[in-house]
Image: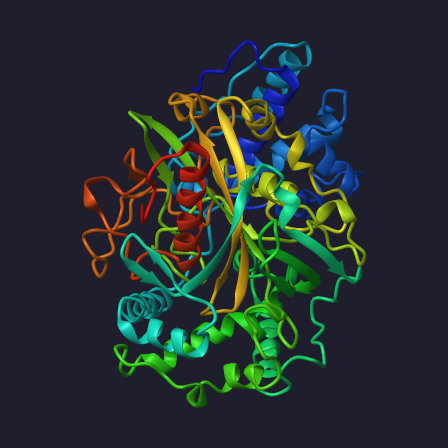
Length: 535
């Protein structure tokens, strides 16, 4: 059993137990659970999707009803857990209680008592679809080759030749395939945002006429077909969500780089920006040590022929903007532990590479045709990724037509906000552009100077736990260098350099993480007066 503090609100505690039951039963998303309830005549209830999400998020003031919400949810979870091949059965935890046991717990909690789960929570397994052995082998070979290419000179020489105006990052002596533009560190996260051009979200299968009508359109149609043919599990990590995309990156202003954005879709970003990476990897595969001319990169050349500087000009491609946060946890003696976990085997690219967390697509959390202006916010996006990736709160993962949960109201965010300005600081540090994909990223830094913070968060009702995009256990990847950091963190010494002289290498570090780290340590050196890198 897990200790539950008597200071915890009985209602939020019980709802948290229902969320844990959902996870243990094997439902990957709240929407999947809702559909299972409605599809089963024994559990179906007259409850709208919006009302269900509100109850699941704990929004109503009253305690959740037994017959109208709790009973059908619990029944559906227990049925899923008992089904052959379920995650609960696979982990020998099929006994998650009974409906009657849960009814008694509901009655006690409704009276104000903080109750405990009727089962023991194990360490969580990786979440994601279960690919075939052949698919696993093929993907492992692609990632092995990617690691080798990124570790050789050809990729950086190619990018230097193509983008001479945008110097590559040098992180602790290693050249990374990404450029970055610093901003004066500020706690005003919205400083980076300029104008949002347009207000209507494209349809998920809509391909704009300004994009590559040849290979780009063919790639887009393949993504649409793959999504339509996919299972619910496969769609979890591959869906055509809404994005904010690059309109223009403005450099040289007093407040640092500024991003003007437009509304876009993930599949158009894949087809018109992300695929530029795959094209370059394929061209370099034969000889990773030598650069590749633009003439051999048809997709990239098509874009260069139409846009003078595709690093700063978002025309003719849908370069989805992302955001990433370097989290530095005080470790005593002026040192910090940076959250740098291994990426999960289930992600599309960079499996087992180290990456900062949280990070994600800068996007409205809605599928409504005209997203609210409140969604165009770096702070709101950061809070959403904070609870999704640092606490595995998957109800914040997918955009919805109606009723997206408010990340700012989550207890994990409220605890963090109460620390800001005291034992924690959250800064905007600049913008990077991954030159492999020509996609920009908004870079943030969260410094937590409370050395007990992590220990305390591991004891919360919903404890610190990486989301499915990150490996839940250490990864044994033989083709990686022995210098690759351990599973979850990188220790920086008092001079903000890797402890023990470690160097991070592009063969196992996601490029966006390299740029965000470079901007973060320089920003922290600025605000604290430390030496920092290169000083």
